[in-house]
Amino acid sequence: MDAANSQAENELVAGRSCEGCTMCCKLLSIEILQKPRGVWCPHCNKKRGCTIYEERPIACRTFYCGYRRIADIDERWKPSQAKFLINYEAEHRRIAIHADAARPDAWRAAPYYGVIKEWARTAESQGGTVVVWAGPNVTVVSADKDWEMGALREDQYILPVDRRVAGGVAREYVAVEADDPRLGQR
Ligand code: SF4
Ligand code: SF4
Image (cartoon, rainbow, N blue to C red; front, side, top):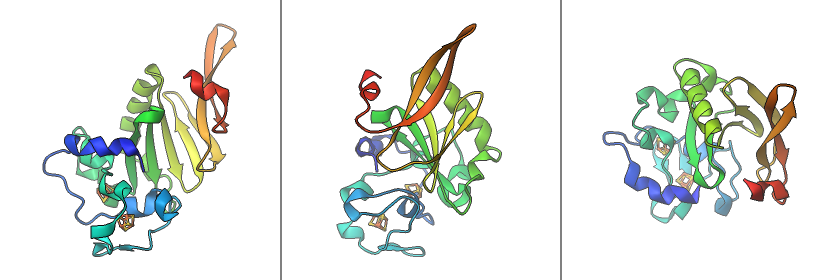
């Protein structure tokens, strides 16, 4: 989970709650629990919630998904209904959408896809990216194309690369290792 979410409590949208939802306990990786992405946490009771609530890790205590933080989206975006969750990863300038592998294309349905494309357009203009994880498989959503990147490891990064082409510049996305010097140039 993203440490930047420790700031998230200040941004919570009034009237929204986690009641009836435990999707982050499945969709996100939690390093301290060695829990990979897309696998239910062993401490999660799907009906009652976290069975170690008082002792849950700091990453769990401080995480709030986009549904809890973005006022412009509505109840249809609650992860228990949408089957994906949204996380803003400030340090990577990335909106990460974590989809349930059982419903990997749920984010492509209305009303979600059009909004996600708008986010991609805005992110691109500001040097950011919109990335969808469904299990290990990654899709980069850009304004005019969805880039299927295939299966990536947790420790790999996605880099936008601008190539000169006849008549201008074309952007593409490549998977790179954490020590790729181009990451520091962004
Ligand atoms: S996915 Fe979002 S709404 Fe659901 S439990 Fe986690 S933070 Fe709450
Ligand atoms: S420790 Fe609790 S809050 Fe954290 S992922 Fe597991 S069940 Fe969810």
